[in-house]
Amino acid sequence: MKMLKIVIILTLVTSTFSLYFPFRAEASAYASASSAVLMEQQSGRVLYEKKAHQVRRIASITKIMTAILAIESGKLNETVTVSEKAVRAEGSSIYLKPGEKIKLENLVYGLMLRSGNDSAVAIAEHVGGSLDGFVYLMNQKAAEIGMENTHFANPHGLDDHENHYSTAYDMALLTRYAMMNDTYKKISGTKVHRAPNPTENWDRVWKNKNRLLTELYEYTTGGKTGYTKRAKRTLVTTATKEGLDLIAVTLNGPDDWNDHINMYEHGFKHYELVKVLKEGFVKGIDDSFYKKKVYVKTDIFYPVTEEERDRFKIEYKLQKPKKEWREKESVPDIVGKAIIYFDHKPVEEVHLYYKYSKTKDKQSFFDSVRKLFLIQIGVKTDG
Image (cartoon, rainbow, N blue to C red):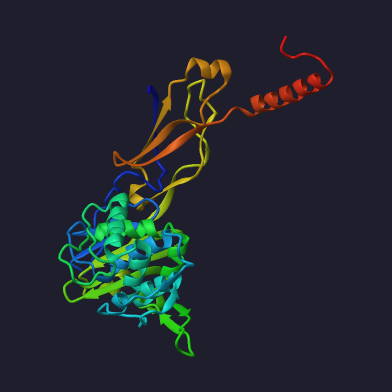
């Protein structure tokens, strides 16, 4: 397909959700963890990293994948019968009972807030048909998201398999994906949840183990804690301040609460979302066929520091107009794309849409009305 190419250099511009690998900023923050990453949610840009692609054990932050698969299954309102195998799961528990019937949604709350390993197994058996079936779904989703250095072997993160691992970067990708789901955002950001307790006279009350959310950092919006003897402390959190949404991940972090606060404070202090491309008609296109007729549907943003504001370039690629487009006025809705570059690297790509001028739209409307009127009074309009 032949394309017209137009390039515009911008001084104040930016981008949003991208199919490209995010551009990495120079690190000036600090984390005590063995691996760490700070990512901006909309664009996926990495604002800080420390051995972010090094493969490590991840413990219970595994349950982010378990939760999003349960949510996406569409079965949250279904009732799950808890198996003996689920009840026997080691480690942290929400104290399910064999044969107990519980709503899948409540299992996801127990999974995320209290890190129930029994809940993880019950979810896996119900959604995947078996543990192996669910693990297959986990790895399928990981590949879909682009988690290139990840392999799941169980739904909870216990150290019962050698081939269960990920990286700080991959877990940030997973969290970025999960945070696009409103149900996940709600559950992840819940401080306390009540669930029925069928064999007792009181409800189960689960308080979130994420202390950043419940007491330590006011801008926290969600996340998941983790710990095993081999993985040590692992932590994923999200935070929002003044429209900037960030994701922090630490693996083997002895001081993880403070690591996350330090990374967030660095991000919020030095970065802001800047508008790269404005919703509406695109200026700077001189081709007579496309001039004042090409537009983008949404504003495009990208996180930058004050010193980085002049590092953008936008390239417009438009299809070469076909003869029939001019004759029949049958131009397709999408006629090209805008590619946004930051420091000469592509960070975002969006569709360019075509719209007829208002004058032509009005003429078409009045022509239709005129033809309808002439038909009604018996006058032929086709010659």
